[in-house]
Picture 1 (cartoon, helix red, strand yellow):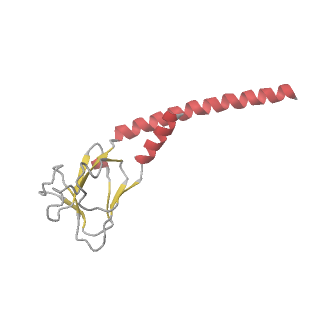
Picture 2 (cartoon, helix red, strand yellow; picture 1 turned 60 degrees about the vertical axis):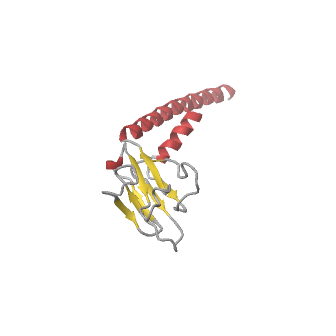
Picture 3 (cartoon, helix red, strand yellow; picture 1 turned 180 degrees about the vertical axis):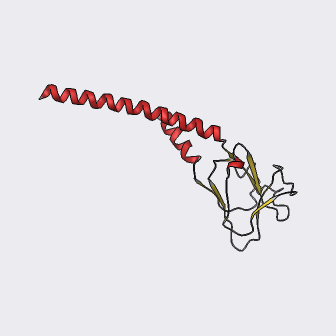
Length: 151
């Protein structure tokens, strides 16, 4: 039963969920301040920060604070990105490119589930649901048989 619940929670986490990085600022000196997040195709990640602060969010294809070929996500609080099929199976590196903020730890990695991972979870859920359905059918038949014996 626990494994079914875990599968359902994982399935929900890889299908259209919203991820949030609130208080997107330079973290205190802890490593890593922003833990790696898991996402799936169709999920949206939202970055928020105090309105008075001048910050941004970029995707760095290099996976480091190297700004070359970075992709702008947004310049204002509420910047968001929706993971696409092209992102599946990759680890995206989001960072703030203002000053030395990325180098100071204002970055986060997001692992995007591959379609194969999502398909495997869906198959496990279907299998578990089939077994559970069979058990309920057997219980219903037994209850019906028992009711007939009593009457």
